[in-house]
Amino acid sequence: MTAETTAPASHTPLADQPHAIVERNGVRYTLLGTAHVSKASVDAVHAAIGSGAYDTIAVELDAPRLASLTDPDALAKLDLVKVLREGKVAMFAANLGLAAYQRRLAEQFGIEPGAELKATAQLARERGLPLHLIDREVGLTFKRASSRLGWWDRAKLGGGILASLFADEQVEEHEIEKLKQGDMLEASFGEFAADSPALYDTVIAERDRYMAARLRESATADSGAREVLAVVGAGHLQGMAQYLREDTAEPGAVRAELESVKPKSSIPWFTIVLAAFVLGGFAWGFWRGGFEVGADLMLYWILLTGSLGAIGCALAGGHPLSIVVAFLASPITPLHPALASGTLSALAEAWVRKPTYADFMALRDDVQSLRGWYRNRVARVLLNFFLTSMGTAIGVWMGGAKMLGKLLG
Image (cartoon, rainbow, N blue to C red; front, side, top):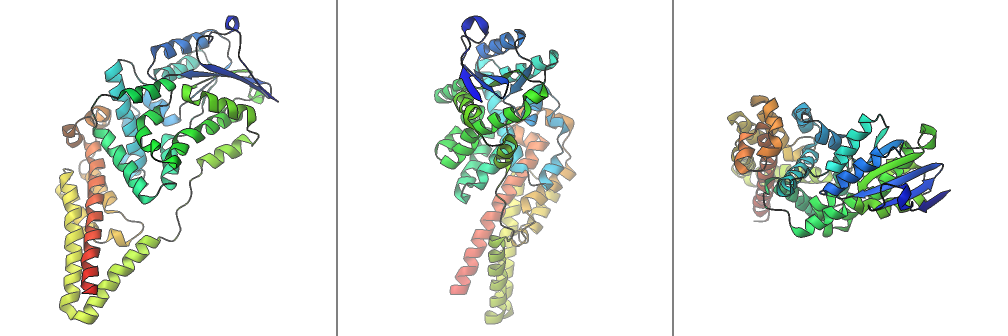
């Protein structure tokens, strides 16, 4: 049984704030809609929790975002080598891009973006109230989005995230309006979401259902919850209230569905086709043109992919050993589904120039300038990964075109 009501002004500290109240299964959920760059939202959180009207608190955060807001040493605890080995560089870059965007907002408006979310978590802990983190991890959100995009849209998204790390211009007025409506991810990556229905649905729309399901799953009558305050961006208010009222699916099943990522094909068709084309081209060269033609094709492939991968690494300020690794790996890794030249060169860079505690602590500031990217060892490892991978990819296409020309000539 569900019902939605709006409490009278005399009985709630939220009378002047956007909010919705939904009663379901013996629990009353009060959704407080906030703006992530508004001091008034921070005041509203203090007033609501300070009223003592709620026995359980929920907030639009995931564990990594909460750590980044409340733990100044969160970045320093990151295992960069593990990020590289597990192929999570893109997720790390997305989180870093979000942090860079938040830093620009803080400098422009004099208020920490998400300050009301941070205040919610702190006040709940100070008062000993159960705190539930109901948002989906940013990395998982973008992994789901990427799985629904074509290769060109994925390239645009990746390029946009990388570009956002270098941006230092003021935040535009239309972005501020999105933040007033209350969604940090939409404001941060709205340019890409607007052009892609799949990205918009994953980054924005389906999180309404996810957070509503997390509320139903974690803040229940069985857990002792009766009056639950959920602090979320105002843009989620209507959608979450609707899902709290109407969604009849089991919340654990909803969460599992919206956390799942479409598995990649177990057969790496692109790598198989590329390897067959390249190795077949070598074989054809030796068979039809003799040793000279076959050796020429092999040498061209090795020098082109290796040199461009090494140039990418060098442009990233890579150590000489990292450049050598990039040169040796670039001709081979495109033919192997489990290897990547950017990963190998970045691992070499992280091993030779191990990032320090100070590098992690300065990361958010250093990525605001080109000089900072080269000064900071963490940032330089990421730059190494992206530019080496890009150089290798260019080499593959150029090498393939040369080989095709030889085969058809």
